[in-house]
Image 1 (cartoon, one colour):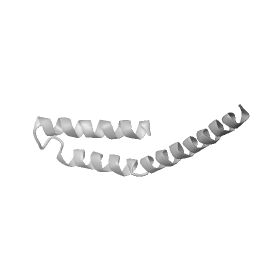
Image 2 (cartoon, helix red, strand yellow):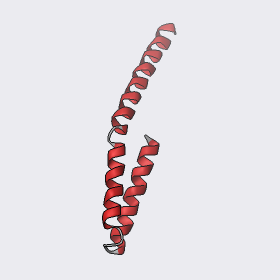
Image 3 (cartoon, one colour):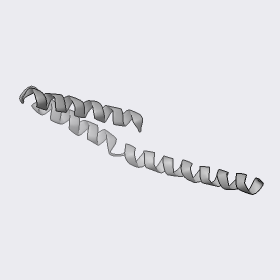
Length: 70
């Protein structure tokens, strides 16, 4: 029983480390992605058709959600 508990604790430690690294790696490009989306929207929004504006809005909101989720 103690050996199994030790194994589970070791696996949990590995998972915790993996989650930390994955979160960091995903967070790194997030601000740049959001800035690029915002710049693209500011540059062309209102100058294109309605569908393009909807896609730009979707892109901005998705980028914001991604930042929050990470």
